[in-house]
Amino acid sequence: MAYKISADDCIGCGACASECPVECIVEKDGKYVINADDCLECGACAGACPVGAPVAE
Image (cartoon, rainbow, N blue to C red):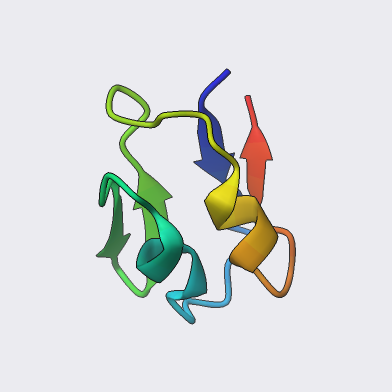
C-alpha cells in the first residue's frame, strides 16, 4: 500500500523527502506530497517524519 502525506499534519520540514530512496516525495505549496505511482511502500518517510504525517493508504 503506497504512503500518503496528510496535508493537515505536514509541517513542511522535508525530513521525509530526504529519506525516500526513490525521490518520489516533493514539496508543493509548503507541504510535501508523495507520488503514489513511484512509492516503494518502504516506510522510510514515516519513520523520518517527526509528526507522523506519512500514512499507508
